[in-house]
Amino acid sequence: MVAYAVDRAGNVGNSTPVHIYNNNLVYFNDSSLGSFAGLDLTKTALYDVFSTARAFTLYGPDAWMTAPKIGELNKTITNGSNVIIDCRKNEPIRAGSLPSSIGIYTTPSGTLDFAVKVPNVTNATLMIARANSTLIDQLIKNPSKDALTPGMLKDLLDSKKIVLYGKEGYAIVNVDTRDVKVKNGGSITVDLDDMSETIRINYVDLSTSTGFNTKNMPYGSTPLQISDLGQGEYALLAVCMDDDRFAIVAGTTFEVTNQAGLLSTSAGTYTIGQPVVVNSAQKGEVLSAVVLNSKATYTGNVTLDFSTLGKETFKSAYLLADGNQTVVKPYGKANVWLTKGYGNASAKKNTASVSVPTHDLLPGEYRVYMFLEDNGNVTSYNEAIITLTTVTPTPTPYTPGRSSGGGSGSSYTSYTGTGTLKVGSSGTVLRSIMVNAEDKVGSLFVPIGTKALDKDGNPLTGITLTPISSDKMPAVPSGAAFKFAGYVYEASPEGATFDPGITLTFEIPEDAGGPWTPRTTTSQ
Image (tube, rainbow, N blue to C red; front, side, top):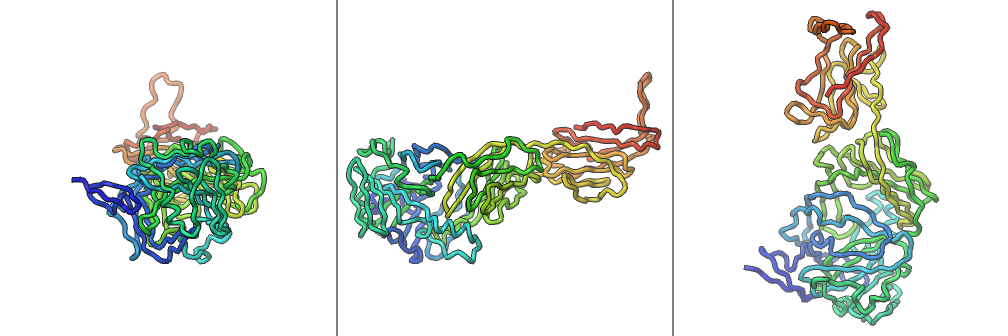
């Protein structure tokens, strides 16, 4: 049996089992949501926006912000007493369901065309709304929780500039000043005294095989000019009126910046421990950079609080690189947790340069996201691919006065006898260690980035280097042109493997028959 449900916008959905009808995920009935652009938001609905996250295709951006590789994400949704959530609330966000990039107009120029397709949605109105830069500026200048008022949808969007699309034309609307600019190519009906009816009158069909495409509309030859929008962050939404309930069917975002070519990294390759330096050709209110491993696939969990709908809805995200569950918080002002060794972030006010530390990152390929912001708007954006490399230092033998027993050095941790390895879930070493034998002659060095496994293929958590009696030393082969120095060691645990190999060093004192030159060998 298939159950059909028709919302009062006229959209027909079917599903088994029955959900909140026509693919809705959340219903709000909360007077604190207020109003936006003349729309009463007390009753608001969200479709399953995770399933429609890729409904839009943008044409026109001259740059793209590349998203990291996202695998399947678990989601946790909480709600208040005035919110109804569908039974799918804790279903995972499937791999590939989120957009792979965000459109960037690097200058306020060019045109915007788009297509959108949503199954079963025959009645929806398309609108573009600008993010509230005043609120964003407040968040930048004073991000403390106490400085923020309760955040609702009405706070996030700016009613001073809205674009409404219809069957025959589109209009740029300033609800506050009641200014309506109807653009070329046709007509559109806008009633500022009844925005709910305005949405109903301008419904278009998103369910056809090709969906809705601005290029195919009567105004296709006169697309929206980005100069009419100006600098800012924008939300492109498909909405409808389910009787008196405002419903968001699908959405995407795009960015309009002021100037291109301002941001760059100081190099394309960095040695771990050397900061990634991002430079700007001009100072900005905030210069920020994120360095993120570009090869890893990120799974994890996202927590959303739907007791409200606004800037406080997002609670946290845990991004686990290749399944590694040892996490850190790269940037203290964002509730995003990331696998240790896979990324860092930094921000600085009123500067033309910012440095992102790399001392705790793993070697590999990284993407650098660079942002210059002023007055709550992104002035300039750029991204670049860099490489982090590791140089295995020449091991330093144990000498009197050198720290041991777990003390920390600038680039590795030193131990005597037995050393503890800090490793990820796949066995990748997250910090270099040196293990010195008790006789102060032999030492093992395990560099960061080495894959260390025990005999069963599990992550290795420690290694031991033990001097043993020279009686255990094998005889020198007959005719050999060398002799043994008399030092014998046992490394454990048995069967451990290292990729790449680790370094065993002998620093033989001169009074042992020297002078001797330190010798190293590599063990797999």
